[in-house]
Image (cartoon, rainbow, N blue to C red):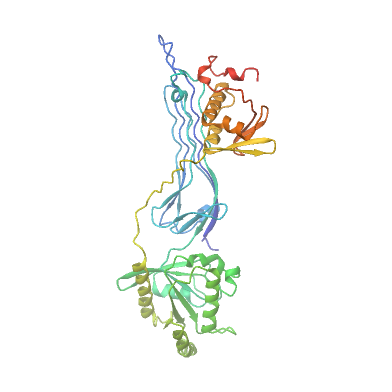
Amino acid sequence: MTTFVDQVVLHLSAGDGGNGCSSIHREKFKPLGGPDGGTGGRGGDIVLRVDPSVTTLLDYHRSPHRRATNGRPGQGGHRSGADGQDLELLVPNGTVVRGPGGEVLADLVGAGTAYVAAQGGRGGLGNAALASARRKAPGFALLGEPGDSADLTMELKTVADVALVGFPSAGKSSLVAAMSAARPKIADYPFTTLVPNLGVVEAGEVRYTVADVPGLIPGASEGKGLGLEFLRHVERCSALVHVLDAATLEPGRDPMSDLDVIEAELAAYGGLDDRPRIVAINKIDVPEARDLAELVTEDLTSRGLDVYAVSAATREGLRELSFAMAALVTAARAAAPDPEATRIVLRPKAVDEAEFEVVKQGESYLVRGVKPGRWVRQTDFSNDEAVGYLADRLARLGVEDALLAAGADAGDEILIGDGTYSVVFDWEPTMKAGAELLHGRRGTDLRLDGR
């Protein structure tokens, strides 16, 4: 049974931010010590990082649910909570990360390349950070934000310079074993190779990697056989080598028809038209195969293909083939653009971009936006003063004016936030902002009396 896994679905949960602390400094002879509640710690991120020593996604296939630790709550005495520990997941070189809709989120190539797959929640501010000239001693603190949750698909696309493609039992694994130190499984039955094998080849001063892609058959691009599962491993290769079996005994098969079938499958898969190709006619140690190779060589060269007759068993022709592949790799590397240093791309919001919007849904009004949603998640609705603080923030943002412009009337149902973290209330447009101007018992808001 193979232990190679090249596609998994990960269920990630970043750490939640710690809650802020509401505390008042108490010390003898200092009756007005003031607020000293600390801020909650940040939740841990989940980071995907390329490690060359990792070659498969098997660990994530066995354990797809991963969670980072939460931030600790703040404490009195201006003590901030500890941040949650980031969770680092090591992935193979060439891993592609896709979102739920199939969109590519990250293409991780190169040792050390990292991607934050799920970001931890922010810690809530303590009442010391919420104090102002008008609000001397807030009786509330903000809650920590929940961390991101994500269901991501990871695909492994082998990073190799040359891909060997061909029918099952064409001798691809034998060629890899003969040209490199790799020792893939080799047998005389179809679909012996169930996973891509990599081998490192040296030809003169050129060092490159060769990938043995499991055998393709007619209809592989539509899901037949094993080809569709591993065609993705051809995408990153700089060159393709068609390994044609000149000694096959299957009826209706010969090197020319095999080449046409494989080319049709590669064309159906798409995206490989620009890859240079050469042909290796294998198994010429068999007399009949050597004769057949000589017959089809002229037809293959007439198509513009370089042809090499080889034998993985006797190693005949392998030196010439290795140098031919090295020439293709050298040309591809020379044509490739110079690698650039990692850059952080900043995408600031447009100057006139609205921070929220009001949408009418039936008889209700939905207020959605990054800021209103975050503020709702940070609010402790069991504390009236915290609710009043939320009302102040929304009023300063212009939510009340936007509701009036949208046609909302007193008593209409208003929803703020998203579907998971949202608050529903009956709107009273006469309610005025300014909790810092209202004096009352700490933890209360006079505007909410009698509600």
